[in-house]
Image (cartoon, rainbow, N blue to C red):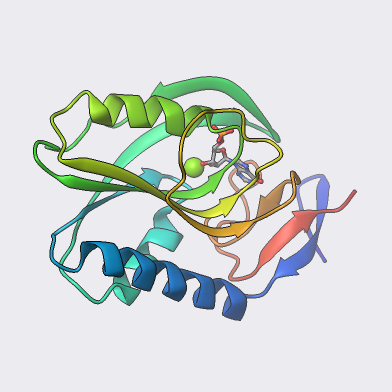
Length: 175
Ligand code: IMP
Ligand code: MG
């Protein structure tokens, strides 16, 4: 068990399971992109640890860039998505949006729309975690690491009010 500010979290997934999942995702993406040079776009802040492991397990050519969006305040998705960093050059690129977790899908939907306003060649989405019971958008998540219940988690890049990103294991809010 760990405590971050006023909340208690219990161990949910250990780092070995997470690393195996990341490895599987890297190979799955490579099977589809082995003859391309995809542009992995990390959605900051949460995805930076997942992205750094994912690209180092990816056995082919790739490029990396980042965008910064924000929709969460505390434990609840506000649905109000903001862009904080400008987009890289996306023309003719094969984009892979890299998300740490997809909850309601509001963040992703906004980003997906913004990216497809550029003349990209293709655009797919990889998310380490996905909460199917919270998801309310009509969008395909092409590569999913793990479906999880609609409960708040921290660790491996995911935070509670800025804390917990550096944890190697993932913890779930104790209810
Ligand atoms: P969405 O717009 O509701 O899909 O929220 C997406 C973003 O909210 C994610 O990229 C995370 O940054 C954050 N988020 C969603 N669920 C969790 C969680 O369980 N723990 C920590 N952050 C989360
Ligand atoms: Mg995020």
